[in-house]
Length: 137
Length: 137
Image (cartoon, rainbow over all chains, first blue to last red; front, side, top):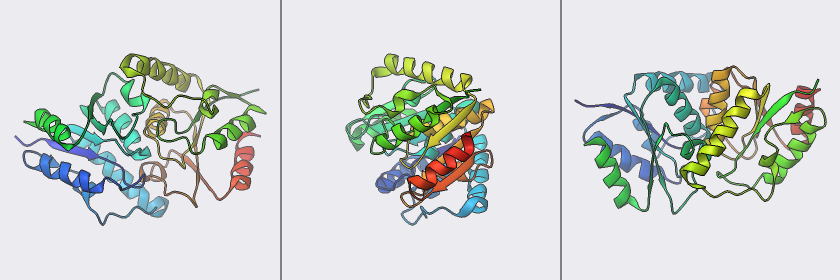
């Protein structure tokens, strides 16, 4: 049974890791369904759309958060949106798995300090994908 | 009557704007009380403390979010913690004011697209402090 996954990662906070997001999404799609496939797209706009257009993005993303069975967040690159989405998902009681490269960043205490979240620090993609496989398979 | 203000800004997401945070906190303190004065300190540690130490930070910050009457967030520098805090404050029904330098960043659609938030784009500190004064006085 394919699970519905909300994949969360930085968009306007910075796209330095966009190729990594695409590889993670492809791996999740081998066994499950990713509602937010666009997060891995190299062409994704990172510009503000104005409050009306951004309200449509907000409505879609919060609808997907309600629909999903699982949240997987790549948090190496800081992101206001991902922080918001994780708090929103926690309130809905959705299981949340947070991945970050511990060689490249220090994770927020609002995530590491919140016992609700499953935190997966990794060092390199081999560790990351092994943890992801362990979670999904 | 002095209001209790929760000032939110990036810590582990990056301290490039720490001096700006300190100036904003000092301005707010002219009329009101800032529960999170440490956010402006240049000596603040940006290292993970391990899950137990980070749990103490999380417990303190969420207690202050419950206690405050108003949230003021400086969001130019992306931050997972600030995104989390804003969603948390929204759920508590606390008024939330989001400031960011529109010349330096594109704000997340999870903030600009959420009609709950009062969004204050600014271009330079003169505009920022005028908006802050308008809000508080």
